[in-house]
Amino acid sequence: MLAIGLMSGTSIDGIDAALIDTDGEGLVRPIAFRGEAYSDAARAELAEATRVALTYDRPRESPPIEAAAGLIVRTHALAALKLLREAGVEPRDVDVIGFHGQTVAHRPDRGWTWQIGDGASLAAATGITTVSDLRVADVAAGGQGAPLLPVYHAALAAGLDGPVAVLNLGGVANVTFIGRDGDLVAFDTGPANGLVDDWVGEATGARFDEDGALAASGRVDQAVLAAMLDHPFFDQPAPKSLDRRDFTIQPARGLSAADGAATLTAFTAETVALALGQLPEAPRRLIAVGGGRRNPTMLRMIGKRTGIVPESGESLGWNGDATEAEGFAYMAVRALNGLPISFPGTTGVPKPLTGGVIHRA
Image (cartoon, rainbow, N blue to C red; front, side):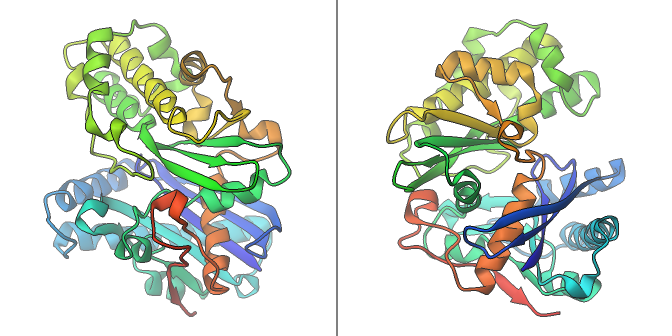
């Protein structure tokens, strides 16, 4: 099938749109990818919706949420149609869209996860069958609802000598362990780019620490780092997951811009090291995808603390920017075919489970 995947992460920097040809199992052929950045106004609107959502004890509608949900559908429809135009593919030739939506709150401990953006509206806007709400069934069955990408990571890594680990460095980081026999273990490791982005935005006005330059010029404050690592999440057994706002930059306040960036980047590295210690065995390779793979300071710190030099997904011919979007396209095809997208070892769901709500064009 031809499938589009649309992903807007917790960093709220933009939309990743990918077109792949896949059977939802062993065949994956990437065709096209584009990134669509949000405007400053859109970023502010989505950030406000997230702030409001986190004040609720369960998902419910309100004007800021409804406005942001409409924004998500409009921007995602535009991103999908631009992708197809650039690829020279007609919408009628595409079988399905995997639509992640925008996570505004993730509370599996309370039995819910909340991604805004109406799948039926996207199907109507694009004329393409859409699978949305891919996390909801997992959480309803007692799973964490995250991470969902491991099934796609396993497809990409097929043929590599195991065990290997895929480290996704987004707003939150997660790791997928692929054992010698193909068994999957996955969980969120801690914040990745999210806290660093928040810090840099507040301290300098930039959106992120380009090339890790600010962190490289600073010094890690060991006392602040130790305080941040003293959090019960890191002692919890896997599978486990985080909300983007479960950690804040508050402990680093008072540090210089450079020292704060260095300390928060080191925090990401330390949490990755702690996570690798929870895997069934040490991976032979650590493959980095997501925006954080472009931060050489972060990768250097991860290598130093784990003893494994991270490899960019590009070294294997992957597109590290497109991996999440491709993964949601892949999962949409699996959902259409009734195949599982989450597993006991990846989200803690009791048995392999398919997911998503299908909206026919």
